[in-house]
Image 1 (tube, rainbow, N blue to C red):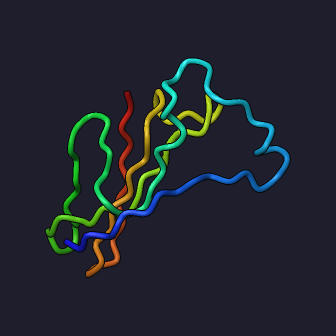
Image 2: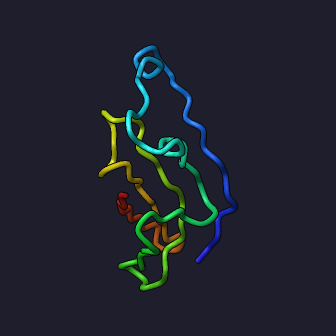
Length: 98
């Protein structure tokens, strides 16, 4: 399993609609800012690293995407985690929530 060095992702609104979105009403302050590539996943519910269905090896963590706001909330302020097998080019994503 390859380990990707960590990169912080900072969302940038690309149009007026995105710029005008309200924030969260009830979520903790860090919710909405936990996007990143590489490093280690910041699992909410506990470790859940998938195994590649093609070769049987543990997949590499590629990145995580956070909820955006109350209107675009992933499973109760959760996140999407994406994993990749670099040998087979197989991808798997999972969701965890608070």
